[in-house]
Image (tube, rainbow, N blue to C red):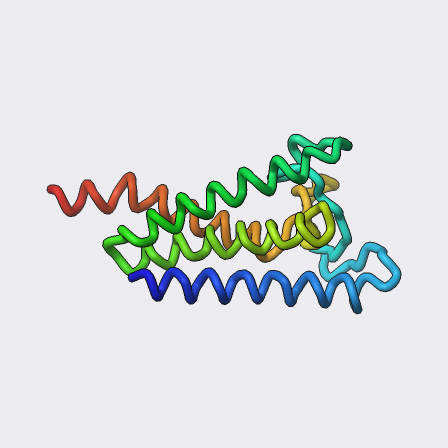
Length: 156
């Protein structure tokens, strides 16, 4: 199981960093809003906080503290991965680990996370996000699903 999780984490981290490199080096030169459809744009947002820009701080300690917390979470998730009982659980943990690593790399390189996917409807914009955020969200949803339903089905 651990191989599936590690390969997933590596794939997500690489995909996330490659997408951000392309956004920074090519697509957003110069930075602007690129309308892709009626509900989706590409933008460049530097997120110095956590999810959806919460806990943003101008202090030098903000990125350091968030980075340290992220490292701790990655370590805990790795130990959980070692105990994963199903392939899908290992992949879900790999999604979260890979996403966390992708955003951690941004914090180290840029002191902020590069976000660029902007979905909107009727003038309301969901906070911009990236590949890492998407992987974390999907991984967490599956982990919650498994904890609520899979164990109940196995024990019943």
